[in-house]
Image 1 (cartoon, rainbow, N blue to C red):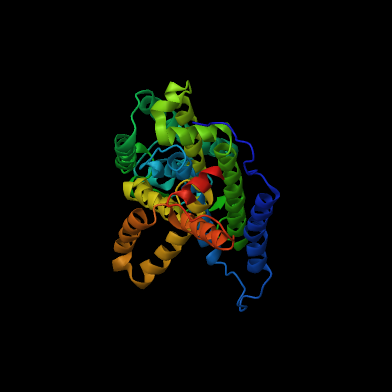
Image 2 (image 1 turned 90 degrees about the vertical axis):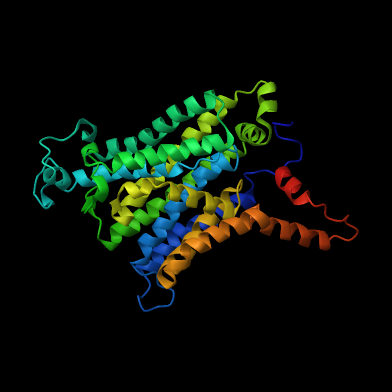
Length: 390
């Protein structure tokens, strides 16, 4: 088992990579805002205002898919509760946004959110303290999901819980959180959740410029998250994670700490999911306990599987394509959406286990072999071997 970098290996930070990354970021951060702000609304190239938060939502989903691919695709940890970290980050942002309403609420109470006044709460709970400050709220966005992941991961990985058992436990965790947040006495809005937000950092949320700013923040956040995940996966730690995914007992035998490696990447993944949730909430305008639903976490796994597990670009691609299909189908034929989603997962698992990116890579390899005179025939497992070498 080779953990370090081998001689002749392709540079993961090559000029080609930076060119592709920069081009993608220019499209997301520069081109889309220009088409929204400076192109005539009746032009075929214009990006209308209503489309900006939708694109921002897709970017948040892409960041969430990255976070799951980091632990599932590279470390072999199938978390079916990753939606919990996304929702916790969203609730932290929602609490900040609720504190910004002040006297503009229905009841005009400057100290308590409307739902607390309605439920006859007399004072603000201690866990709401500090959320009137943006910096504190952003700290909680990262700390709360990260701390939960650290504690959960320490207990699970230290006990060597793996495979389907770990997946079931993570699903039970998010289901328990969903039931808890549904209760009114928890202080998070109960079934209705948190909504009716007014502004963020002094900017009115309903203004097109604010929505565009949130979209740009989501695009930049996705870019930073991608670079962080790539830095981890191409490092020595990334090689250890791949080895853990394929043969954990051998890695332990070689002297590596499987618990520490898993715990680190699981915590980082949860923080990324929390940040994605925080960017998601002000663009959607609501956060409620349904975000904890285990179905959301299962759907997230489908995004990663369709795009290509173990390929960061595939996770983002899968999130975008599946949600585009969802947006169209839920309006054109809402009764078949769930059947389409389930069929897509089964089809991907049985026929295209490497996802869309894997198919494209295999086609490129076949095409390159055909253009090479005298090249030996393509082995069945050679695309996977070539991907591992890359």
